[in-house]
Structure formats: structure tokens, C-alpha cells
Image (cartoon, rainbow, N blue to C red):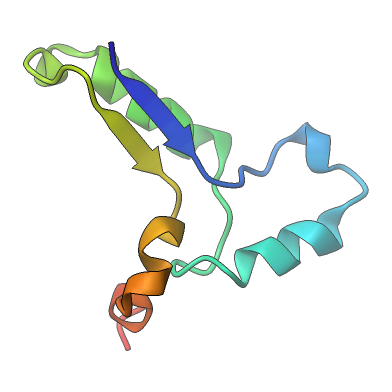
Length: 79
């Protein structure tokens, strides 16, 4: 079994709360929140033959938020 651990994703659930999405985007090293397509691509990869030998992992699909405390934030943005 494999898992996908998404960060904040822009979905219809954010309707009317765009300011919250913009605020969240500022916390992500890549400068944006995720899109449903970002998560779908990760799920498709884990379900594909290319991932046939990958087992028991949790794949963060989070725009780098998990490593933002590691000092690599600027490197992710090309700074």
C-alpha cells in the first residue's frame, strides 16, 4: 500500500475563501497551493507500472511545505 499526502489543494471547497488560499500559498516554497491535477499525477504514478517496485511509502505532494523549515526554501524558489 502507498499513500499520497497532499498539501493545501485548490478545490471547490475553497469557493468564497480565495483570501485564505492566497495566504496559504505564501507559506509554500513553490509559491502556490496545489491543484487537483498535481495530486492526480502522483496517484497515477503510484498506480502505474513505473511504480511497481515502490511499496509502503507515503509520497508528500505538498509544494515543499514539509522541508520549508530545513533552510531549503530559497533553493526551491531558485534564490
